[in-house]
Structure formats: C-alpha cells, structure tokens
Length: 258
Image 1: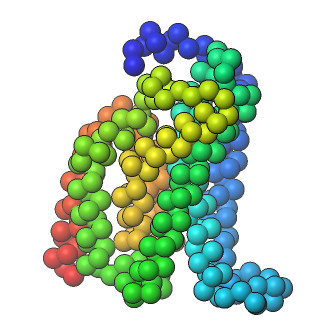
Image 2 (image 1 turned 135 degrees about the vertical axis):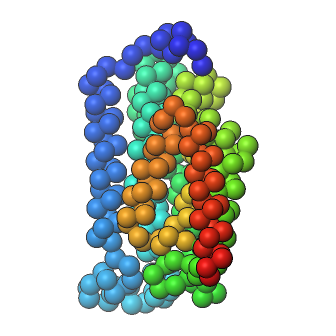
C-alpha cells in the first residue's frame, strides 16, 4: 500500500489511540496474571470449589482448565501483536458511516474467537499426547518428538504460506482495503479473517510450546516477544527465514543427541 493511500486515511485522535492501547495493555496484563496464578488441577481451586465440582469428572475439570490455560495464553501472546490492526480499524472507521461505534472491539472479538478455536485444538492435542504418554508431567514432549517439532516449525517458517500470512499481518491498510465489511457483523468477520491469517502465520510457533514446555512462562514470554518482533519489524521475511534455519539446525542437533 502506497504512502499516499495511508496518509489519505484520517489520523486517529491521540486520546482514542491511548485509550485503545491502555485497554489492550490491561487485557494483556490480566492474561499474564492469570497464567502466573492459574490453577493447574481441580484440587488447586480450594476445598469449596472441589466440593462444588465433585459430581463432575476430574478429567473434564482438568480438560477445561487446560483449555482455559491455552485460551488465556493466546490472548496474552497474540493480542499485543494485533494492536496495529485494531488501531488501523479504528482509524478507518472514523471516516466511514458503515462502521459501528464499538467496531474496534467487535473486530478484536472476532480475532480472539479464532485464537480460542486454536486453543481448543491445542487442548485436544495436549490431552491426546498425555494419554499416549508422549508428553511429560511437565507438559513437554520427549527429545525425539521435540526435535521433530523444532524441524517442522523451522520448515514452516520457510514456506510460501507462512510468508503470505505474515504479509497480511504486516499490512493493515491493505487488509482493510481488500476485506472491508460494513456494520458490526462485518467488523466481526474481518476479525475472524485477520485471526485466520494470524493463526496461519504463527501456529507452528505455538506448537513449539509442546517441545519447550507448555507452561514454561519464560519460553511463553520469549515466543510472545518474537511474534511481536516478526510482525512489527521492517524485515519480517528475513527474520522468519533466519529463524527457520536456526530451528531446523536445533532440531537436527537434538535428534542426533537423543
């Protein structure tokens, strides 16, 4: 998208911009707080809640807790990277009569829904790996499986699909020029579309958590920072390709030492 087309879009008032950024920051901070303090099993809730959930299968409670972990973790990791797109929606919406007043958050809601669906898939995968004894109590896979995940993530970083999805995430103006839909339903659909591109860009990076430790918050923070860097820098493709090569090398080295 040319600079002329971008400057033709009215600027977002500083107060609106600061408000959106503050709200995103609060949601992200609350998500990280949950990850730090979250219960890992039914027993962690305390005696009162354990009695209330007694009629429910412990397996179901633990599955729900795992889903909550993944869903909140995806908000903590991915919402900051969506900030430029949300701000651009707010900026464009100011000049259009077909945009709802709260469209920015409807758009963000669609984005979160897609990552929640990804979280459900990740929870099912985690549950299956645990039942197959492929994943440990520390929620990380055996070395040879971790090596395969590292290599797979590295290869995906080099694929055209990764580059195409990353390109959409890097171009807010171009995205809205080609995907604009009117009204609240349209904002939600655009959020879904952006979320789908974002999942296409980052799903294998999220799969790395199975190799590094699903609840290793240091790695969660590192991956969050990398996703943000990959989306916001001027050289995303170079970063993706170099990272892909590093991941493949690390995976092969881990396989050789397994």
